[in-house]
Length: 109
Image 1 (cartoon, helix red, strand yellow):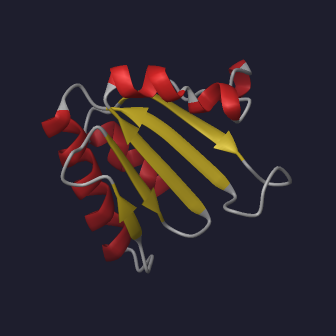
Image 2 (image 1 turned 90 degrees about the horizontal axis):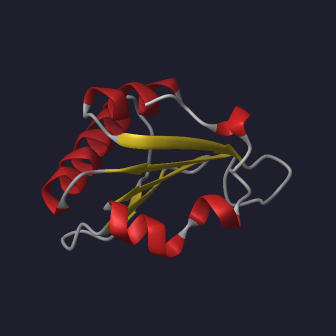
């Protein structure tokens, strides 16, 4: 988890939100939702995060949304990361779906 947060900060991901899914679903323990400024930024964030997770021995990773890079989903087992362009993120509004509107679930970023 800390590795993913560090990687997102390093790549200048924006408006990062971490949602604790424990007890809400069996798909993962944590979901991170973040944004990149453009298609290229979303792709770069997703690539860097995949590299970091693989280097740390996390795997197998399942990745969806490349090469379009409007919304890239990285499923790392207990961790799911969504990297959006801002317009696409606003349209799907996953934070509302998973109840991440509570202030204690936001990460400064």
